[in-house]
Length: 288
Length: 272
Image (cartoon, rainbow over all chains, first blue to last red; front, side, top):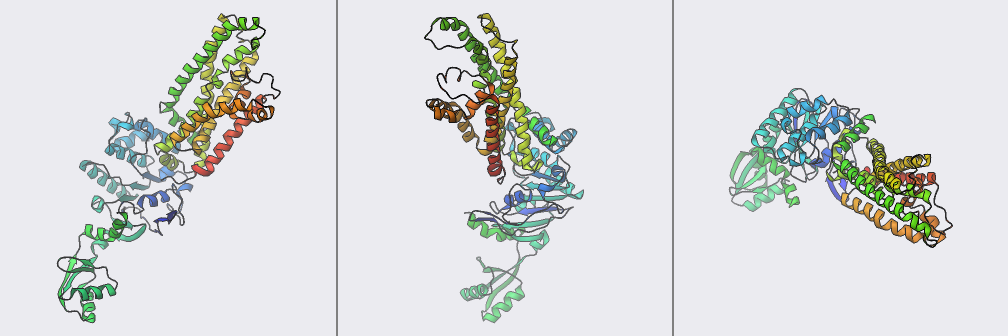
């Protein structure tokens, strides 16, 4: 899918598949195009090109949308004058869902005691739980959650992690977006990483951890840098030397061919968060 | 479609807006009807004794009192209909609404129907106020309250129809001007200032009056068949107001035009 707002290319050629039975993380910094992508998925935003389907059916054509796909997009889609129970009653009526289900999801999300209070007085954490209650209303096979961990306290974060894994364990498809890898690191089985509207990584977390870097240095550091850049590698300056992606064997051979004598050649396993930041790093520069 | 209708009913019933507006409508219409009934009842004799004073035929007094529901109260269903749409935009509840019912035309259709019925209910509520206060006061001042007259009840029916159409127009306006403040300012500016000025201005010449009678407020008065605003004007003019059914068609056309434009432009826009 692609989406352009005038000259701004918010999302460019984003293509991915989310599998059932697993929690998929949809990651990227703020402004990377995550929310726009999710809204295109749900028929709320019309893609400039491309399409998205749930098991082959576009969201707009689903016979029972809320019972097929459960969605929590942002923590503010409430009329503050309605109580939580009445808020859910509006959409249960629209989707033909039995009213008894409202009590079930209120209990499940832990806001049953506050269900008859106006939503206007809710904390961000309680709004997140109400958003999740809306997502679960139709007992859907697919869950699409945009930043569901935002605003939750540590106990709430643990609760939602367990809930998401439980739901995936039941064979459901769970897609969770976040701008922080650490937030979802322990929850997700697979990640799709978005930066500046493009997918920069798709796969398991292990793939991501497997990304290797080599720390390399030479007396003539300028010549080494030139050789590495000439080979099309992304070079990061550190105190100890130059960090480049690749294996020691590759980088050593490259330096040998360029006639640069190395003073250091050391493999380095980058941390998950570092790899993530590197992948999306260019996006942050643009945002600033 | 039944589900979409039920959802819209729950939406209206679960916020305070509708009954707050209904209460203000009762107070406003009741006050105006009582005032007019008292005024005409007391002054009617004196006016008819003076040959130079503007004459108000006695049989038009009761309809003028009862039609205050639309003459001064039509703005209430109009605002209710507008807010039914703009509050969803303001609180971003169009997102869950369109997630639950992705066929957006159905949502708009359900809103038009449910608000139309609610507008009719506002008509009934307004009539309770205008008849309930106006009729006893007319009777007390010796003016015929015409409660046994079938024309009075036909007028009541047309009042209900007009109020329903105004609520439907409100939904159309809201779907067209989705910013709540802009929509409410537009509605108030048009109904309280622009249209009254236009109606007065166009009444000066015959050729402008022929156009001015198609203004929505004038069409509403024509549909109802009586209004405090039309009973005194048009004296000596040769342009007849619209027939009641023509007035109704004009309102229906306004409702259709704003709703269709709203649907085609703003309603199908991206929800971000």
